[in-house]
Length: 102
Image (cartoon, rainbow, N blue to C red; front, side, top):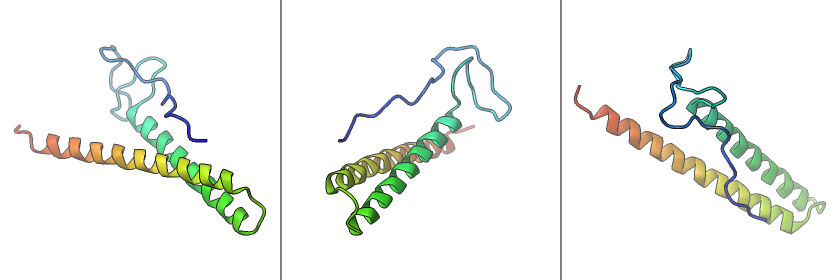
């Protein structure tokens, strides 16, 4: 069954005093850097797509349940659409910053 978007993990609250880390990412004590968050989200998306593909192959072989296949494919599609939306927002933010006058 399709579920809502789960928590992305601990994210540093706005206004914390954590400075830039070794990679330039700003994290707070116990927080997660933006790069780690994006990496984890991409990893979960890939895992959901692999799971959906595996269940689809099992169903084609007659070993799987079609409801599980439909749920897995819909979950993978939802994750993929979220990843594409995040990518689009990152590209739009980069383009906006690149147009700023220095």
